[in-house]
Length: 248
Image: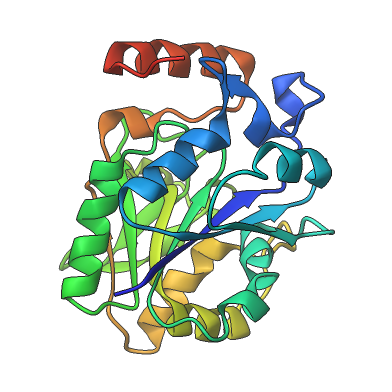
């Protein structure tokens, strides 16, 4: 099955105290997004749509020599779902698996992506999320399951009930979608939430409600729980990268 990726790279990264777009902030001397693109290449993704916004020119310039990478402009930042919506014209004629990742996740592991893609393609699913259990899930979207353990949706912390906030299985923004099913979900996506944003996190539940095969799989490595939202986070990520053998 063909594999394509959408990488979300439009954010400012205000808390990083950097003039650079967040995805270009270096980790061990390389822009964070370079590690994401390397991981995708390692699992046979040869076509990547990078969604750009803040300092788009600089992101384009930095990645100009990467094979198979093209750029899509998100002029207004109206949420992660909107970031994928702006790619619809590029996805319309594609048949295959679409991986969606954020460009500021330098510790994304090819082994995790391959596990997700293999199951997704073998079971011919509509959507499969990569998740993990986190001791302190504060700030992250929680994976909601029914009494039988079946995936029912993702709830963002700001929209979660007190009971849902006790859930430790979290969404780390690692998705695989069937392309045409993704486009169907985007058609039904609304911004009826407190933030008035289009959440990509609503798409799996939309597909599930259509009777399609959707699941969340806790296959992500512990290191993939580390996200970068501050310079202190970046320092911890660089320490982990060094421990894992990443080189500058």
